[in-house]
Image 1 (cartoon, rainbow, N blue to C red):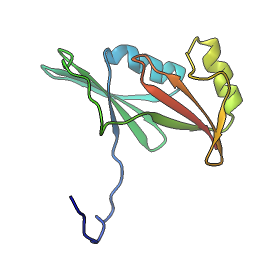
Image 2: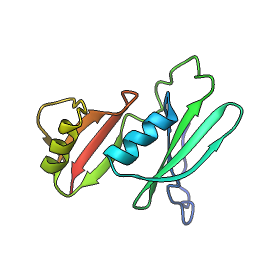
Image 3: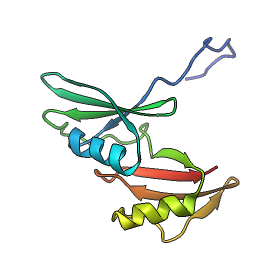
Image 4: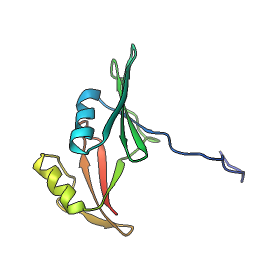
Length: 131
C-alpha cells in the first residue's frame, strides 16, 4: 500500500499500551510492586480480564483472555515496552535483588542512552533506559 502525503490527524495522542498476559493479577502485582506503576481500574467480561496500570502519562493495559488465545501473535506486534529511569545502575541492582532475569549482565549504549532488557512475568521484554 502506498500512502500519499496528507495532513496528520490533529491532537493524536497515545491512549494506552495493551499487553496480553497469562495471569492479569500476577502481572499487575509485578508491574505495581516491582516497577512501581499505580493500579487503576479493572474490568472483567465473559472472556477478558483487564487491569490498567499507570506511570506518568502512560497507561499499560493488561489483557488476560479467558480462555487464552490458541495462537501467539507474530509480526506487527510489539517487541518490548520501555521505561525511563534516572539511575539505571540503582534500578538494575534493585531488580536483581528481586530475582528479575536480565538478558545481559550489564547495560549497553544505544542512541546516546544506557539501556538494559529484562523479562516480565510472561517473558515479555521490558527495557529500562537511563535519561
